[in-house]
Amino acid sequence: YDFDNGFTIASGAQFVETGIGTDESNDSYALNAAYTGDNYGVSITYANIELLNDNDTSIALNGYYSFDNGLNISAGYEVVDYDNAVATADEAEAYFVGINGDVGPGELGAALGTVGSQIEAGGTIPDRMMYEIYYSYAVNDGMTITPLIYTKEAENATDFDETGIMVKTSFSF
Image 1 (tube, rainbow, N blue to C red):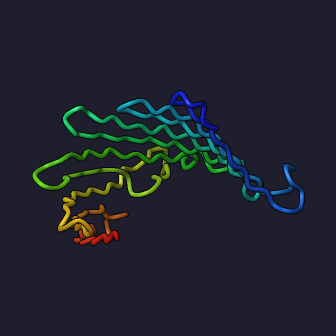
Image 2: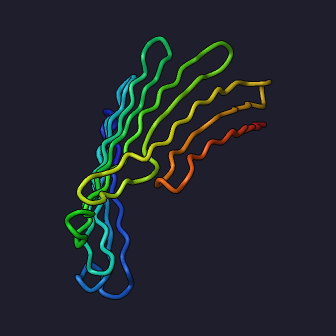
């Protein structure tokens, strides 16, 4: 629902046909509240996911700020509580930070964040990270090219870091 003053709320639910809303079925629901101002926004989301007698919950906080000079920054943080997991693996977290702005004829951006949710292992949460940088520019009125490079840290000591280069081309008519 949009209150027409920058505040919005949203909800969603998923039920199984048998036993809707009961302990015997796998039901899920989420609630979101957000505020968007002239040059910033913030949102908070709560989710409850039932699966095989587990009642996992997540809370996420996301936001952005756009400076008057065209520089933008965004960030997000999520924490998950796994209901019936062992105490040394019952939490997970994920986060990201991004920045972008106009540079020359295009837009330069960079971001860092965890590779998905990082599940607690032995009482500590690892920080398996991913980094990216891109530059997006219009070739003409109908085509934009965005080259980027990223690095994703290895999952464990026997794995290798992954680095990639991509080029995205967008057409609009």
